[in-house]
Image 1 (cartoon, rainbow over the protein chains, first blue to last red):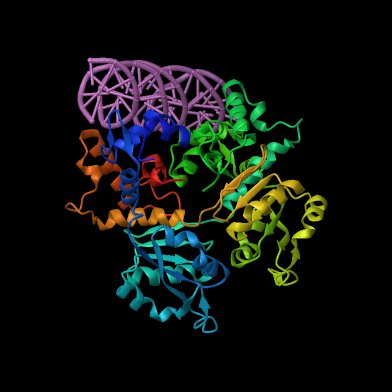
Image 2 (image 1 turned 45 degrees about the horizontal axis):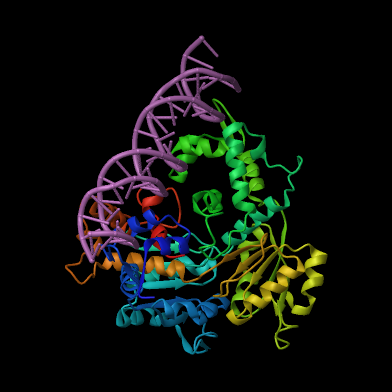
Amino acid sequence: MPTVSSEELAAAAGVNSAKLRKDFSYLGSYGTRGVGYDVEYLVYQISRELGLTQDWPVVIVGIGNLGHALANYGGFASRGFRVAALLDADPAVVGSTAAGLPVRHMDELEEIVASQHVSIGVITTPPGAAQQVCDRLVEAGVTSILNFAPTVLTVPDGVDVRKVDLSIELQILAFHEQRKAGDEPTSGDSVLDRAPGPVRAAAAKLRRAAGGTAKSDAGKGKSGKGPDGDISAVMPA
Amino acid sequence: MPTVSSEELAAAAGVNSAKLRKDFSYLGSYGTRGVGYDVEYLVYQISRELGLTQDWPVVIVGIGNLGHALANYGGFASRGFRVAALLDADPAVVGSTAAGLPVRHMDELEEIVASQHVSIGVITTPPGAAQQVCDRLVEAGVTSILNFAPTVLTVPDGVDVRKVDLSIELQILAFHEQRKAGDEPTSGDSVLDRAPGPVRAAAAKLRRAAGGTAKSDAGKGKSGKGPDGDISAVMPA
DNA sequence: TAGATTGTTAATCGATTAACAATC
DNA sequence: TAGATTGTTAATCGATTAACAATC
């Protein structure tokens, strides 16, 4: 399939074709009127804009179960992420092997970051060590940090931090479960249903989205899609 | 602090107070005019609506590094999630202990789900086993599945699946890194800047959001917040 | 009563989408 | 040329927010 139309792509993604064309137009004019988009060229342009064509060396600090799991994670390599080093402060762990790489001591951090031009660090330490590790990463020159520790990190301006809370998705599932069960004290209804007119309508809409069959893959039509179907809007950050 | 006003809460959260009041109103009228919201009562009502006051037994299938890490994850218990069982198909793993719980054989799945009323299953198996495990969870009565395997699962209507891709957040960081570096081939500018008028403005807005200091915690003012600051809008699902 | 603050209406703002000129 | 499809404008839709009556 050498080319694809906005209509086809939009149908596959479950979105409006005008929105798709408009979104693409922000990247430039990569389509051909009367023909569509060249698939290979489009994939390249989008990949490039998202930074997926670059090689990103990362260090993982804290090689417990989660650090191990991430080191082995297949999805990293395919997105251009390369594990430059695994680091730990525990002498009992240093020297062992994970995902074919040796675990090195934290003291080597600065040298590794400098020599391999590492700009992204992943923190998988226990919560108590996270801020200290973060400070050291920043000091060494890392400017983006992915934090799996349940700790809110403080960083200087110019450094990005993203926090991954592994229980967020479980909370979203539980929210839906609760609504599937319809086990509210009063007659199976949520407080939302006791609210007046427009609120009740919004509640019904929420319930349809929650009880629907929102799959993890896109393109199964429009039900459960869009802002109304995204219950994460009402979940805490 | 027994009560709090929408103005205070909005300032702390970095949102508009009218929006906060409107959002709260969807849960009911829990405030008192001239006074504000009773903190304890509000926390309870929101927790209840989100399902955080319930106990949710979950099974974790696939006790490799990631399964181990999740079993040990402190955030689960505090959100009402209780690990009902750890399961694996590998006889070499069955019988070992993780997070103080014995790893049990997959053959016990059906009995555990039925007797402990498990409605949520977590899949941390290798990708090749995920669909098979998923089918069996569904057959056993599980209606919500959290999938960490890099596999798109097919489930019947009425079953919710959420897929966790551990590299998504890394991709977002890399996207920002790319823009910090400003290392586009042509004079440090993105293709976005070569687009006409309104598009260039949107691109500049995106760059401000990307290059800004978006921290993982809320409440540091409005910069980098809101839809414009959420780069995930342009990331693939 | 006077001051404070909610809950909600109405105005504003921005995002989505229908429509269509441009053009392959 | 006729048909197809993009890129963009203008209309529509929905979400956010200013404003304020209700009321503690």
